[in-house]
Image (cartoon, rainbow, N blue to C red; front, side, top):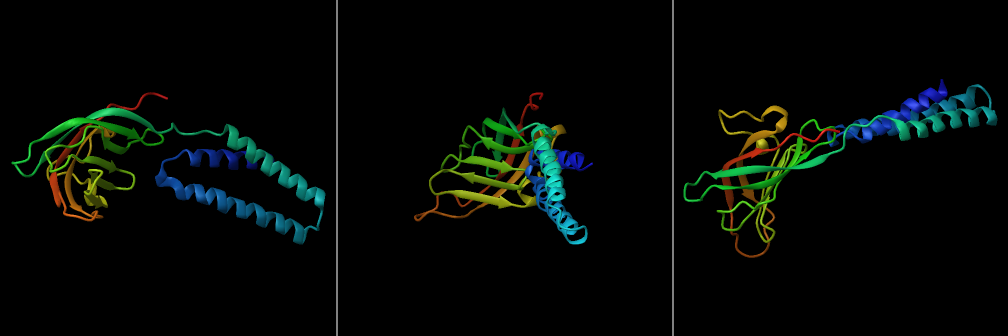
Length: 210
């Protein structure tokens, strides 16, 4: 029974470690919470059933040995994978032309949804070309030009679609974001871009099998 419990603990840890960042707290509970229960159990054995070194050693060996076995053989979800997609950016100001190009689409661990979008082709038409990063796990959108301009949005509003648009397509393969980004963390000197408003659309292929 102790050996099976150790194997189950190790397998649960291995599985939790492969989950997306959203479930990091589950990993903490498995590591700290169950470990604490194990230590308390050993203390109870010592206090109420007498100090028997052989008993403690056997219990520890069975649990830790099973845990090590479970860590090496337990199930995991599919690792994150990056595929190539395309995007278009239609600015709110008609004087700025529409941009389009390629982007990388990172499917999160488990391949359950798009975790990160990063434009490979910079968004042009702004005073300086910008790279867009949209992190759907932390719900953060950022535009940077690598010099002085960083435009940032956080929270649910960062990845909200325009009115009347669907939030995302099936499996996050397609979607649209209403960008409304204000400049932050400026380098010294005059700003080149103070604000960006527009509609960012993406299309990504599904993740490869496995």
